[in-house]
Image 1 (cartoon, rainbow over the protein chains, first blue to last red):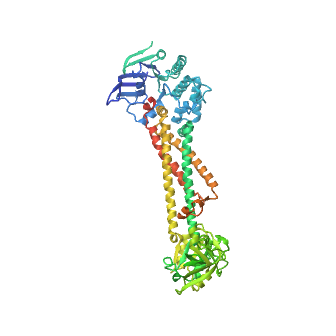
Image 2 (cartoon, chains in turn blue, red):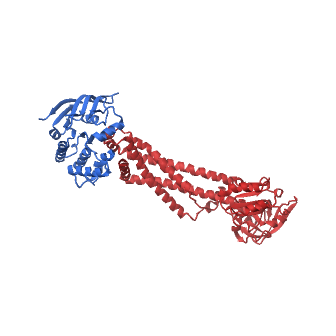
Image 3 (cartoon, one colour):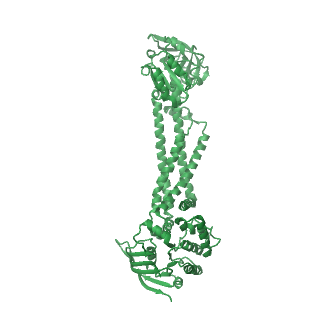
Length: 229
Length: 408
């Protein structure tokens, strides 16, 4: 399978001039197309930092990051924005949605930025909201949705334009176990149905069970990388 | 287009998100613009009053004198009445009114007091539409003809002289032969001027009566002309100067330099006030937009994470300012229009009469909104308001997404 993500000798040090904190050290990682991988480890182990570097939200102190074969860490801010727009879907732990937009408009946001026409956007958003189980809730604002529903909208927005990879940072952290399980089930279904690569950072054991591949980080280093049979 | 529509939608809804804050800044913008337009209208009203007073207090739009009269307005600097060429020009359609006058320094005496005045010999019919005097008679009557033997004096002067309608006063001046010219006149009317100084400065008699008293023959002191449209002044002035060569032909701006200076001062005041109000409003706007941007740091970070380029975020924030400014400007203009409509009948400044008179104002000021001021104030508020919002917009756009998202 083609590698969607590749990290070589990747390191990230915060405040390199004084009181340096090594968030990541010499990371070597490749993620293949269609994988459903989890980054696991305790708080401060570097999971979120690694996701941010892969998604072009942050720049490494050393090393290289490739997304679909394109080097990410050397891109200018505008190019990074385009890369994120067209190839990366994000699901954050909280504050995932734009509060002044409805669920449907939140889903259509990325497509609007991509310049997709109204009819196409409407059709795709309708389909994806149906797929994530939010049919009929498209006109609700985030404040009118439950936490689980909001995360489903975020997942719908992340996958609606078929990105190369969806990066989810602790997506279940603010959800009860039943809602979290339902969301993970949804993401796995989408992974299997659409072949979209998912990389999920978590310290939730339930997520670890859902992910076929588990990359464990500790103190900024990969200490284990296992694929379930 | 899809991006533009998205940015407009985001901006519009973001503005409505914090309604109280939006209302406060809208009030600030609209009050600032209202104050700018209202102050400009007051100043324009004052300017108009100054110019009106200057023009209608015997000056007209232009005057013709013998050379030297303006330095020494005595009988020695009298002139012949208008020649045929000048008369033909004065018969033109652009001339609303014209008249010749005798105008010399004089002393008026009653049995109680004496005062230095300007004796003005007028053709009463010609003064209608040319100066204030025909419409200013407060008590008694106006003069009948150039041969009228009565005298019109100001109400304030009558008070000072202790005289009134029906009583006699003596006017003394210098005749053309340098002899003392004096004559008794019966007061036939008292006039009321916009300013007390006017009531104290002039006494009016029939022109031919004055010419006889001063032994002027057919000579007069001045020719005053009122045009139908002040904008025609430069062209008419040039033609009259050609027709009345050898005479001193001057526009009101030269004859009344104080009025002209006050008009220039008014213009400067308007723009100074505009700038002060704009600065005050701009601080409020920048502060509001900064607050709005700071509290949405994570939102802007997420938008960037989703692929929105920084410049689009900058445009979104500028759009938000545009919405606020447009709504505030509309409200400000509406407020100003309402206020000016209510004050259509003028603002009575009688209580400030003495102070107002120092500034060339009458007792009532009529606010006059000029289109150029409304456009200028609105443009200043909106254009520079948008310019002011660039800083908070830039602050929003320059956020690195990861810093914005991880910010607590």
